[in-house]
Length: 232
Image 1 (cartoon, helix red, strand yellow):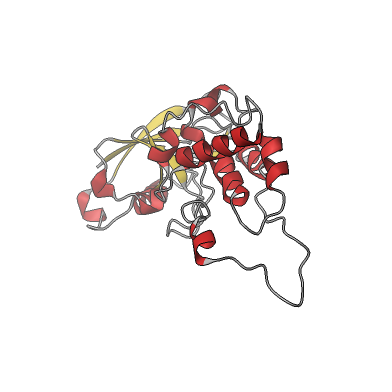
Image 2 (cartoon, rainbow, N blue to C red):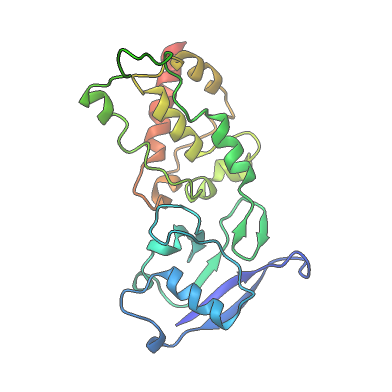
């Protein structure tokens, strides 16, 4: 199986370039994930740089662009990929080295969405209760692993990375806007009522197609826009 991997070392390279690798079939198990293959390739070439941690699709650290689609390498079966497998870093973010990108801007936008509960002061008398129906509204919004696959697949983010918050941040915003325990709903919506920060989203659906957890950021952003419109 052939791999074409983008390589970039800022200490020696002026621009990214492709390097070809090969693994023989006997080196691969039937259930091998892409990350397993990358780890074997790094045994061949210890200079190959990429992030990985949990290897279970939970930490979100090993996002990359594979055959033109953003994904998590640890839960992408090799059998699902056509050879040659072309691997590049996530688009739209600065490259630190090889497949490792600088996530600073992604995390900055995520923090700007205030992804934390702002509730009434805690009381010893009772908890912040929710009905099962209120809790169910959060399903499909809180499971994000912050891999940035959705945001870096979004043309609106490519065109306006400093202004558009991106799908991951806006989905997190929607998660707390609809949380029945949160008391800052109006303030949240007012802060997101911006033509570039939120409404730059054109619902191209790249984000939903790229999410390795099967979430739907585009639908969450549509609902967020509707809530903002109701405030006017």
